Image (tube, rainbow, N blue to C red):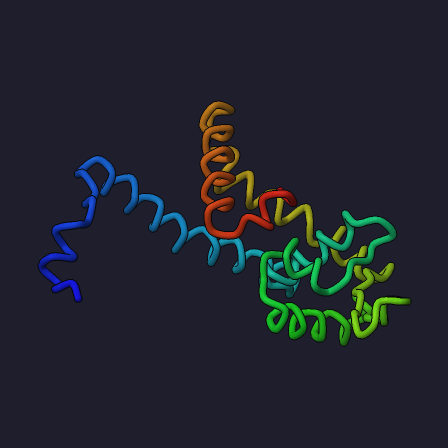
Length: 164
């Protein structure tokens, strides 16, 4: 068994420069999602996850996806997705149906009302993304941020990378 002291000696501690960048990333991860979420809730009544579910369905062929695939694309667990789709279903924006010939698999479908809701929510969301992120970065910074994000997402959840 390794003692805490021995374990600490085996750690490649962050340099001062790395620590500064890590803290910046953590501050981004802690402040940007709530800011985006607040705008969506305030202007459209959707949370960020629900918005991403609607976007994922709108971008899929015929506006439907099996729930298991939708969970990957929307970057959430099946349980979280099921609860979100339930709320979206109650609002009339999504329906669920059995996948023909696929056993117990269920697919989610974006309704016309759901597409209208997304089209209504998108302008405010895009304005907020422009205000908080895109408008503050040079094209080079934005490209570097995107590349770094893809590398990290690939390390944390490789299935998501193919949907970026």
